[in-house]
Amino acid sequence: MEKRHQEQKPEVISDIMWVEKYRPKHLAQIINQKEIVKGLENLMKKPNELPHLLFTGSAGIGKTTTALCLARQLLGDNWKRDILELNASDERGIKMVRERVKEFASIMKLSINQEKNEKPFKIIILDEADEMTTEAQTALRRIIEDSARTTRFIFICNYLSHIIEPIQSRCVIFRFSKVSEEEVIEYLKDICKKEEVKVEEKALRKIYEHTNGDLRHSINILQAASVNGNISVQQVQNAIGISGKSIIAEIIKLAINSKFNESRIKLLELLYVYGVSETDFLKYANEEIYKLDLKDPYEISSLIAEYDYRLANGAHPEIQLAAFLAQLGKINLKKDKSN
Ligand SMILES: Nc1ncnc2c1ncn2[C@@H]1O[C@H](COP(=O)(O)OP(=O)(O)OP(=O)(O)O)[C@@H](O)[C@H]1O
Ligand SMILES: [Mg+2]
Image (tube, protein in one colour):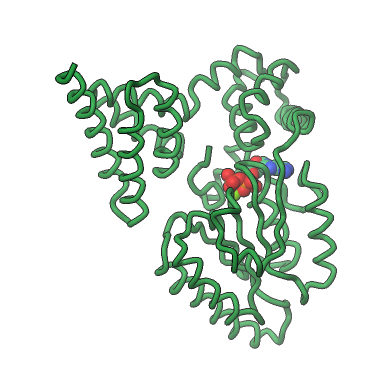
């Protein structure tokens, strides 16, 4: 499950959250994506000829991390000053593309000249690019071309099919694969060693079963399950039990049963304690309703689509999601009367 802006959290988070603490800083530390790392290292031998890149694959397998490692290694000291990291799903639409990317790309031209080409170019990392509207992506085409001399783009997405063909064709595409069971387990074991936590092998297998190759989710569960310096299967089970997804199911159930206030409080907990984004809430809600054995999940699905659209258009997320929960309660009332 996507967490909101892990990459942009304050410095201290990197001490608290294992996913940040153990986020690789160098390409060589990235696991499971050997072919990709090899390919990138090859491209990096001639930095001036580096093409635009497009990283695609499921959640939590190293796409953002790889982009950051690449930027760090290519740009050296002060690398943070020379990258623009945008989360496309936050400020979707044409406005973000025009204003922020264009502005950055043109400032880059200036500063590169001033530095007498000390560094070959600047890097724009456009994370969650598949969440951008087609219009925004189309506008981006021009910007990519206009800034070609000074800027390299790294697009990151979960679904390649949501990226328009003209952008795909301007990039070298790298497909990230899910992390294999053995590599997840080895990686988690290593973290346990560093954290001086005792862990049962079975507990690690249990984590993999649940997360299916999503390393971020695996590390989060590992951390949540570590109590008093040890991790057992039972502790893993408990940690899984309180994961974001199961809370979403609970929120939906409460709302359908017209327990509006309780569901809204749980929703706030999900957003602010578990850090799940508003759009992810709707995405997972859509999955959960089909597991709930409802008479008419389709009606709720179209409601979800409507609220997803509103969020995409910049409506206030908290107000919209509260209204969504209130609507769920009404759907239920309508049914009771008709039965
Ligand atoms: N291949 C990997 N090697 C080492 N650590 C990894 C790898 N993939 C993920 N991780 C760990 O999981 C965390 C999340 O990874 P990352 O942000 O790169 O995922 P992502 O592929 O960008 O996922 P999303 O699509 O959800 O943005 C990292 O901080 C790191 O701790
Ligand atoms: Mg990412």
